[in-house]
Image (cartoon, rainbow, N blue to C red; front, side):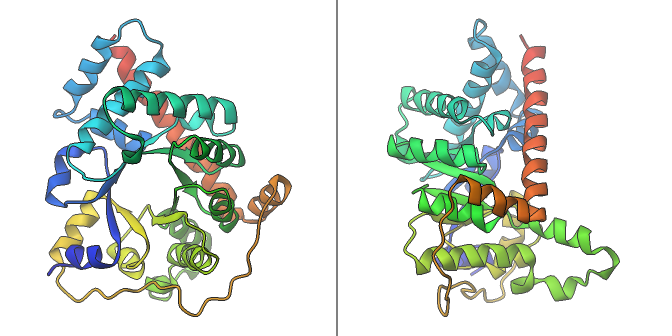
Length: 313
């Protein structure tokens, strides 16, 4: 049994890609997308015609409406290959606008429902800003399930868990990147690998806190740089993994035991109002920087996607 098959015994495996033609070989339960992944996909020859087809079908719509239809079209294709859910992301440029996030999320869900897809098969991805979390909490009350992304800080995770969000995606690799860059020449890879990886430690802390306090929000580790990070989080509720790393796991046959459990934890329950949340996030330099950077990068790729669409109008 290869390590991907072993991992599936401990954790729900999710494919992190817009490349839906790759999905069958890995048999994930769910799939996640983001603006960068969709941009990457539509620039490949096998997916470019799909973009053109959507653009030509809706010549009179505004740019943001066409973008949403492109995102949903990819989501619909992905759902043909996975039995579970697809995550589709709200424009990152709305990350600090609660009302605009609500409007876009409702529109995305309406497009899925118009195509015959139920709410149980879609997660709306929203950046885990204070405004994003408040919007997601409202959507959850309406029966629209959410995946809070760009999550780097413990306060972000707790705010989501206490708000009844369906799922969170704490980023492992980007946390690792920040600490490695910050340490510079003092970084020793062997001392920061596996369970000692700073990104792994962040997800493990969140997972254990949620389990101790009965928070029902699913924890899905994301943004991996190597298979060691994945192996160290075997047992997490879900892990969303790129096709390259899924293929690496398929090629490995060594035993892969459950690494993450809720045993032996003692984490006091905490809650955050807006002021406490903003202060806690501000105190975490890594999370503050990576959240801001992540929003900028996703926003930049959204602009590039719009340029590709405009070129085909």
